[in-house]
Length: 143
Image 1: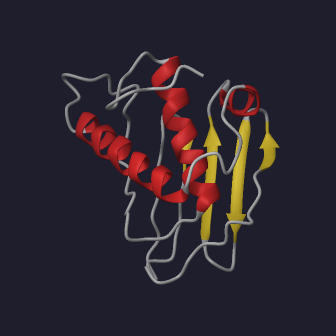
Image 2 (image 1 turned 135 degrees about the horizontal axis):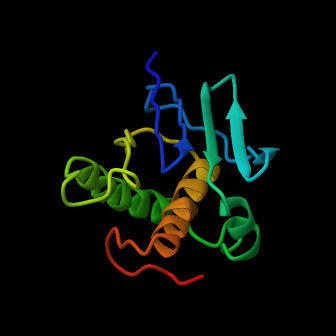
Image 3 (image 1 turned 180 degrees about the vertical axis):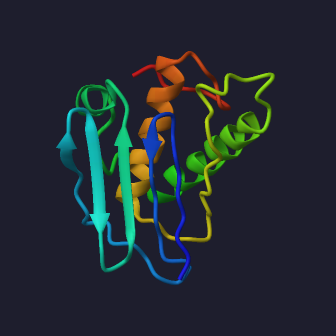
């Protein structure tokens, strides 16, 4: 069993089973675990997403498009592109702020994280780009 840790800006964790054939249930619902914290967990499939960033929870509730607006394939493709660019920036601390891009993200497209995980990662990436005036690639919605 392999565990994956993803940290976005302050903290974003994804711990997943490496079995690519398993699909993480889409029925997981986020729960608030503190001030401006979004958490998704499913212990039987061993994954957890925790996003802690001032303003993200409020932004998610007020500005993000509703769940199921995007297809899972769309979210997976955008997340792969954003994460690839994020990781490139982490590896160039002289060019990009190491305060924004602290650690690489081990997002593996062959692992089926499910809709909820991809939805949160995608929306965090949109929030991050708009809040910190970054552009990770392509059009960034101004929601």
